[in-house]
Image 1 (cartoon, rainbow, N blue to C red):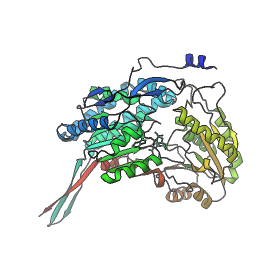
Image 2: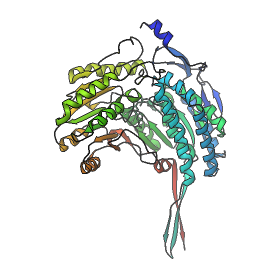
Image 3: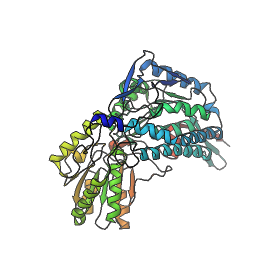
Image 4: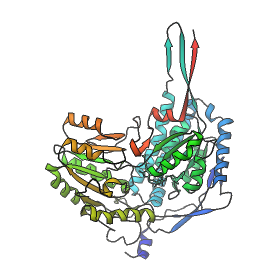
Length: 493
Ligand code: NAD
C-alpha cells in the first residue's frame, strides 16, 4: 500500500472542527497570544487541525472563571440530588453520542473503533456511577454517650486541576470529571496535547446537560506550558494527574510549595503470572487481550508474562501463534484489533524497544511494521520469550503491543520476578490452587490484582498503584474523599 492509497482508505470523520479552542467561563476562546499547535492523526501523520496552545495567561483566566463559579455560582451549594440529576443527563448525552465519540476518538488516537466505542460507554458509566454515589453518601457520626456527639461535614475543596494522558483520553477525563463535579468542585481540565479532539466535545455535552457556566473549563496546550501553569497556580488546591511516572515526579515537586492535594495515576509494567495448574487456554486468551487491547497503550497492560517452567514451551508456542492472528488494521475498521499508535514520536519509542528486544530476548512473533502498512504508526503484535529480569524490555514501560515472557520454577521465584520492577500497578494471576492465588495476591506489590480474570473493573473498588505506579487511590468513595474536605464538628452534651 503506498501512501496515496492509504490516504484514500483512511477514514476522515465528517464535520471535523476547523479549529480546537479553549473553553473558559462558558465561552470557546483562542489563546490570548493566538498561539496554536498542529494535531496529527496517527494513520497519515498529517496535521488535520490546529488547537489553541494555552499558556500561563490562559490558565489564569480559566482558574479565575472556575473560582468565580465556585465562590459565587450555585454548583457547590446545590443539593447532591440536583447535581446528580445533571450528571445523569451528562451520561445520557454521552451515550446518545457514543458512535460519534468513538469515531472521533479512534481517528485522533488510532484506537480500534470497537474499543473506542467501549471507552465512550465507560465514560457515560463513570458519570452515572458518581451521580449515584453522591446521593447515597452517608456522613460519619461518632457518639461518646452522655459527653459528645461528633459528626463530619464534607465540603467541596475548590478548583480542581485535572491533567490527563492520550491513551484513552475521553474516558480518563470522565474518570476525573465525574467525581470532581459530583462533589461540587469546579474544574480546569488540561487534556493531552497529542489527542485534544474528543475533549472538544465536552462543552456542548455539558451545556446540553445544564451544567452552569464556569464549572467546567478546558485549556489545551503543552504539558510544560499549560499543565505546568495549572500545577503552579496558587488557587488550584487539587491536582489529579494521570500520566508517566517521571511527569508525576516532576509535578509532585512543582506542587510541593503550594501543599496541594495530589492524586497520581502513573505508569506500569504489570506481570501476568501463569502457574502450571492454570487453565492455559483461558490464560493465553486473557494475556493476549491484556497486552494487545487498546494498542498496548494501557497503563494496566500485562506486559510481562511469567510462566511456570512445566508449561513454558507449550505456552510460548500457543501465545506466539495467537499473537500472529491478532488483526492489525486501520482504526475505523470494525475487524481491527490493533490500530495505529498515537503519534510518530511514540511509534519511534515503541519501535526502538522492538529492536532492543531482538538482542534481549527470543523474538517469537511480530518484530516490526505489519505488511501492507508502510506508513502510519502501525506495529505488529510483538512477543519476546526467554527475557531475563535485568533486560530493559522487562523493566521499562513500553506502552505498545510488545510483551516479554519469562520462565520461573517456584512460587517464590514467581513472586520475586513479579515484584522485580519499580512499578506496582496491576497483577494478573492464573492458577487453580485457591490458597496459592490468595497468598500470592497478598504478597504481590500491585495496587490491583485480577485472579483468573481479564481486567474487568468494579468502579466501587480502589483504583491505583503502589511504588512508581502512583500515589493515592481513586474509585468509589476514595474519589469522593480526594475531592472533598472532611471537617469534624464536635458537640459537648
Ligand atoms: P505524560 O506524563 O507525558 O503526559 C500526561 C499529561 O501530563 C499530558 O496532558 C501532558 O501534557 C501533561 N504534562 C506533561 N508535562 C507536564 C508538566 N511538567 N506539568 C504538568 N503537566 C504536564 O503521559 P502520556 O504519555 O500522555 O501518557 C502515558 C502514560 O500515562 C503511561 O506511563 C501510562 O502508564 C500512564 N497512564 C496511567 C494510568 C493510570 O491510571 N495509572 C492510566 C492511563 C495512562
